Image (cartoon, one colour):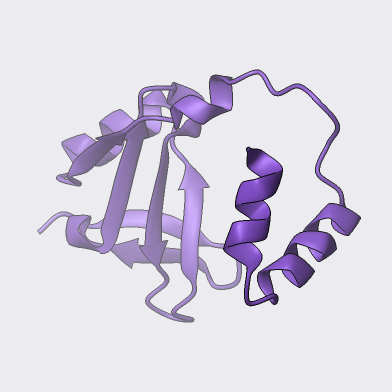
Length: 108
């Protein structure tokens, strides 16, 4: 079986099998990454995966899954930024028994 060496920030170099790694290839290449659970400290480790790393992991037997960035990241947002006070006001609204009706009236 293929052995893949990776680095845990706490434990240093560790040896993994292809099944120990998750490779997530994004259609926006800079967002691609691989992750694994360190066999020594059991921390979940996530690292960026450029094209070279993606090809090395695939050639080593790691299965890749492809994902896309959410469309919302490309949306233009206008208006004031959401503040902590807005969040607190919303929290207080949700504590009211008629919160849905009150929110519906504001949106109409």
